[in-house]
Length: 419
Image (cartoon, rainbow, N blue to C red; front, top):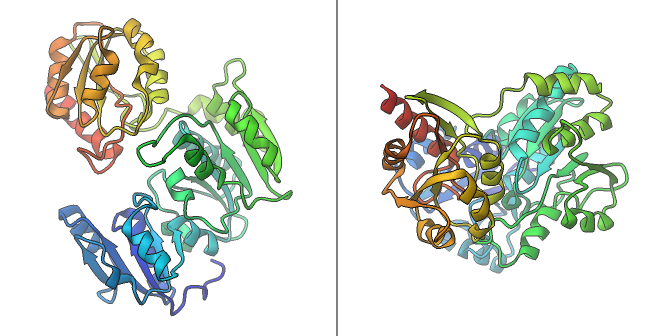
């Protein structure tokens, strides 16, 4: 690592006791910081995470955030789930305490070359494929960030000359300050997270932070077919590279090929990696088949655009499990496609009434109390040759800790049904 004395003896409060919070707390403790951690939840999962902290010297506050807990702090490291309108931010501003993200902490210590990927859709696939082409070209790479492996958890293994393929969300970008990836990618920008952002412009501004510190020694890779990104390209100080869907290449593959070209990785090697790629868990993952009915786990689809992609790429009649926590997006966008492809939609979660209104007179719908009941209802409505698809269009936080837990519950329920 670099700058290893930067955090020494600093009083640092970490907000959030999930994976990134635990990883960040342990790293900073090892670097000599005086670490505290606060989480406004208090449940079994949070308490289990607390047992993963390296020392009892790390002070913990559970079930609330209090002003007193941060009053003596030099620095607050905030989890992506905490919006900048939260009281904790207000207190930090009043106390003149800087607030940064776990990504910023890792960036300040990282000796490796960072390739950062953001966008409304496709981030995880592109981040994974960039990692795979780097591995195939015999380079050491760490695949981390919003993909599920915290950036701070990998730092002690990194050396100069290594690479980081980093998935980064708009939430994580909000509290970056000096973050400056060598290669930044914005795959697309569509309406998303409007439950958190006051407007599309505010959402776009968060995404823009990925390139705000770049200069002419860096690269910015953008989707040529996205009008918002073409407009943003006028602001860029980095070298601009555009990608677009061509021939048999989908946009994700085109983006990865562009990165490969920047890094002088052989094109055929990249194409071979694409051919061998079997996909990601929770993204169009075929779980099982029973009585001629196929079950597909697409829990990663938390936007309308992701669900559109799923519906377009399934050619059987669909029984669609959809819903979760609404992110302020317009579900009417998908109605005409759903009318053609979907036999029935089984609605779950907080957003089901809003989705029901959007689908009115276009798609037959049923309600379910939970995901397990939705799987049972979907199976009851399906016939041989149909596909039961979980592609929620919504976040998971009304019923699950994340999309991964939602996907695991779906798979477990399907496999129990088959037994």
